[in-house]
Length: 242
Image (cartoon, rainbow, N blue to C red; front, side):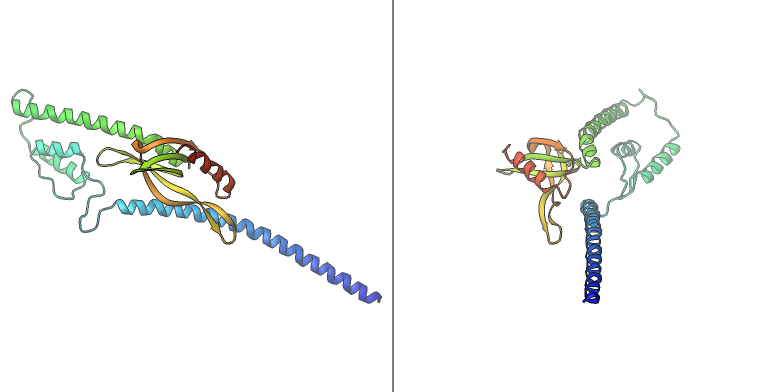
């Protein structure tokens, strides 16, 4: 009987050690999975940025230079009667303008050609107007770019057609359309049920929100993917503004 009790105690001790080792292993595995999920979220966001960038590129059938000539260069080329090749970048155009100026033996003298004087005056006024537009656009985009760099979120209510939409979005930046409208680049956040980790706050579809369509908004700090309860409270709050 005595030997049997010793054997039983040794068996129980081994079981306790095995159980403790399993608990430690599960703990480390949980930490690893959470860290891996964070990495996957960041990779997903990076991939979304790359996809949006690729969508903005033209098709190979209609190529466009990666660094096209500026409007000022094209207007100057028109004044100097320089032919700009298709798809020439700004460096090639700069070289052509320099060569044209060197070939021009008669320098421009104000007052000698009234028509040329008027053309140059109009070009300078247009340059000033475009520079002011670029400055205003950059100034309007800057805060949204800063929000994107700081991983800020936004509670936003905006109109879409005849509907009013309430969303919690992650701000990625901003840009101006060809018609001069400012659009905010965002990703709508949503709750996703993970089989192993349970509910998580994850980015969903990409949304470009026109600034003029926003009815109400508030910038907030980033919501962690495990802060599901906080996300639900914020979502109820944004819906209350509809």
